[in-house]
Image (cartoon, rainbow, N blue to C red; front, side, top):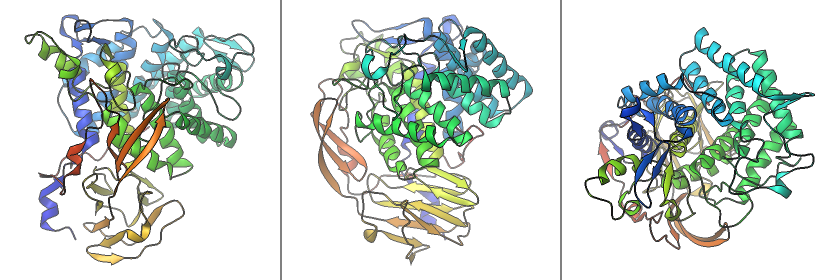
Length: 533
């Protein structure tokens, strides 16, 4: 059973929750009190810092920030910025979803969130009303629908455009499809299903976005390509369409060919010297988690690497490098808006190319990505509880206490998990793992999908996995550049060459010999909310 030490302290490894709390602060500091808390889409850093309003303030930013607060609160328990959140929700209903067709999808996602959080006939009607308005604005031919289409024969593999997302037929469709895919998993809505299927047929068979194998080129998020792939995957899983499931799995695998093993995802699959938009990381994580949850659990190893590394590193936690030579009286205002934001562009080892501006969309997306990963750390199906990633969180079934990256140790306090599956890290030899229940060593077998299984567990029991945490150096070529990467388990502690302005992975602090501890049990009451994606 859990001893006294486990009742009073925890390792300082609640990275996802802490990142979300920083994001909450950044959102609140990107709202304009003189315009009823209208979001600022752009934080300009050079040549002179200023917060700027743009067309994307409303339908896009109101939606993403509403989404972020709604998803993040059950993870953090934070009660801060509730007035700001309410102002965003109120403003959302006044936004024009067709100011740009991209807006409709982001607003629809926020409405689906609100419905999942508190289902009601009124909220369902809001979704179906917007979906009907979208249908009226689309073009309809044969058995498919679209916002616009390219000339016959256009395809991304031969004709991808870089630097402009407008040419992509998926650009206005991805968010709409994603929202409808999630909504129709919960609600019997034939008109929404029909609209979703018509758009999916267009994307798959007419638009020229993907080859039959699932290959593509072009803008992963800003062009709507990965967003549409997530939606198609969700729908294919619901309808059990194996061909589409495998095609969308290949989309993820193809994207990984152009990405780094630590989660740098280009918003521009094809050319070298690309940059990573945090929104692209979110889409890739979402698609990868669907694969891990439903098709191949080994993909959880990939997603854990993404979460531990580029997702967290793409968040600004230092402000001085991006605000040089700024009047000291003005600096705090811009520093508060920057701190906790996620980068709109990044290189695999630096945020040096982010020194001109930071867009608000990536801030909302960063919080969403942390939520997606957090929600899949522990899952339950048919009475079996699975611990899929070694990241710290609590749940109704088991508390996950990770000591990485300091020690190779994972502790699980059982709440309600008579049968427990635990994924063993794929970078260690299973013979080197010690498994115990209340200090009694166990000898479970390792399944083909990388899990051990424990039966007959009682509430209050302590399960431990102890394993070696080794440091290795590897060379990896990403987007035309060679990088020397130092790994501590599945955590990157350095990527060289370092950047000049804002280098990433300056993680020498991870090399300390013992795990830093914090008194109490952080986020103990945060076991999940009603919204699941």
